[in-house]
Length: 210
Length: 210
DNA sequence: GCGTACCTATAAGGTAGATTAAGAAAGAAG
DNA sequence: CTTCTTTCTTAATCTACCTTATAGGTACGC
Image 1 (tube, each protein chain N blue to C red):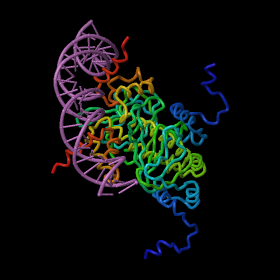
Image 2: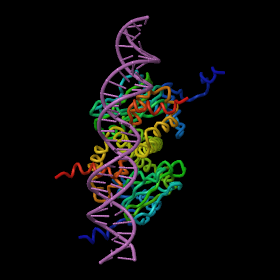
Image 3: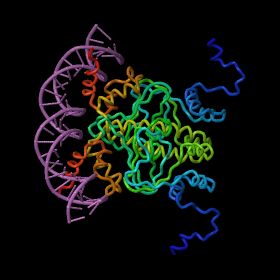
Image 4: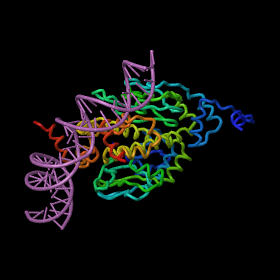
């Protein structure tokens, strides 16, 4: 029955905090946490609700928080000298987002992070993350793996940018992130791929032939 | 005198192995190692001498070794369907090189890693690196930081690829890696920047005006 | 010393993709 | 419903960059 699984009647020693449940499940999938580690995660990660079009980072700010997306969708982008936006990254459920360069060097960021939907996030302060690394060594392994995975996709994308046409990049994007299809506009995808929205439109036309 | 600094006459408890000295100094700069950690590094990293044009990874191989460059210079590249090479990365003294995607997933690599000069490297096997992470937790922190730094430059490069012209990318490359100037040919740099060597040549001409 | 291989430069013609503009469609707001 | 904003499309013109080709320069093996 639904009731029993929700009420957790049981002999549980520690009652899980509802807001942080998604991130704890996420960590558990990478490397199971013990009770002490669960408690510290619940302590240092703070929930925030973010409205569509709201920023969680703006150019000039130092990025002092690392962000885990519980629900919703974000884009991180650069605004160039002509006022054009260039999307570096999207983030949906169970993704991390933040300007790691600014986060580590404490230099002002050149990026914006903006919610594309009403969203729920969990954030950790830099000092808390450092504390985590020093006092709970397991998180070094966890974040090493997360960063490695991010680096692999980042390198994939560089290779594509220097070796593939816009059409190939678009097809690969759609294959890799089919769940973005109904959620992210073509304008945003074009900006991510590094082409103009008009040209993306002509690319798309090639496949709609019926 | 030179002699005394070299002979290390002293009351040293442990005599440092010469081949691994560069990587130990490198690690020490990130996070000081204790004697036990130094010994394990000396045990798991193996020195190899690589001739110019020799490969340390070829397409189809699984990348089973992580490589630290002691001396020399490497390029890592993709060969596309038309037989063209696209440089993903260069590596000189104190840099790491390897296909981390293949290394972690154990899938065949699509990349080549080739020596551009006669070189000396230190390599660690995947199983030894995992052992390092489990048994000597400090290396999780060290490699987390190394990977973070790699990710930051990788993201910088993506942003540049989607937002800058070839000329801007070339100028930035030269500013960021001036020591590559006499060491890496323009053909190789063009392949890294994602432009044809001919076009790089016309870009360069714009600045040689005297 | 010479040949071979590779690197750089220059030029002409071609193409992928940008820019500008303008209209149709579809949400969101009021 | 109307109005405003955003999105998608189409087409014409323009430009950054590619391709092909040619030739001189430089390094290296023998």
